[in-house]
Length: 171
View 1 (cartoon, rainbow, N blue to C red):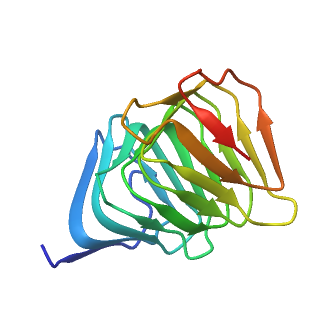
View 2 (cartoon, helix red, strand yellow):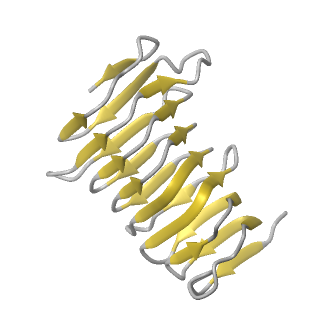
C-alpha cells in the first residue's frame, strides 16, 4: 500500500500491450507514452515526469486517485474516467468520452472531443491568459446530489455541444 511505482520509459511503444493495471501509493509516469489495445487503470497518486500520452480503449484513475502534472501535458487517446483531481497540467486532451469525478486545472487548453459526464460539482479551470476549454460532445450530470452545477474558470469556453437540462454551468 505504501509502494512507489515508477515507469521510467515508454510502455508499449514498440509492442502494444493488451492492458496496464498499476497500483501504488505513488505512480510516476516518466516515459511519456503508455500504449495498450485494451484498458489502463491507475490506483494511486499519479505524477507526470514528462509530457504524457495514454493510448487505450479506456484510461481510468480510480476514485480518489489524483494526477499531478508538474507542468507537463496529458493527452488521452481513448475514453477517460478520472476518479480524482487533475492538477498542474500544462494542457489536457481527451479524444473519447470523459467522466470527471474531481476537478481539473491546467495552465493551458483543455479539449474534450466526446461526451462529458460530470460529478461532485466538478470544476474545470484553465488559468493561462489565452487558455480555452473546448467541448465537442454533450455535457451531462452523473445524477448524484450536487453534480448539477459545475464551474468553469477560463478565458473562453467553446461549447460545440448540447448541455443537458440537469446541469447548470457557471462560467
